[in-house]
Image (cartoon, rainbow, N blue to C red):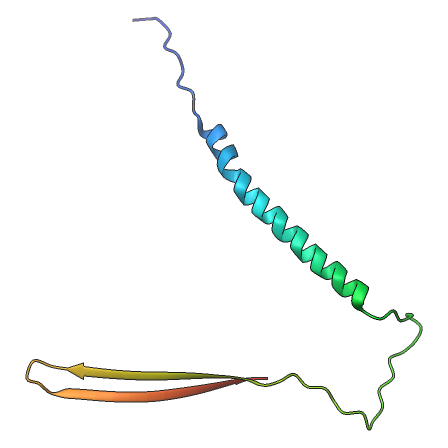
Length: 97
């Protein structure tokens, strides 16, 4: 009875290592993609020296972003066992500037 029993070994580190590989690959891919987009934006932007202020003319038209409109339409109907039905309809509009 005094004999030493072998300690059970866990396969958890190997399993975690195998499961983490796709997650790490996805995160690395996302980081490279974002870095590539930032680099493209920096290269496409016209160069301007830091000492030159940006000049805006009073008569120049102000560029605004287009307004986005979201419309949500909801219809519902409820009936009971006696055959009474109630119906409803609503519409919400959300405007984002």
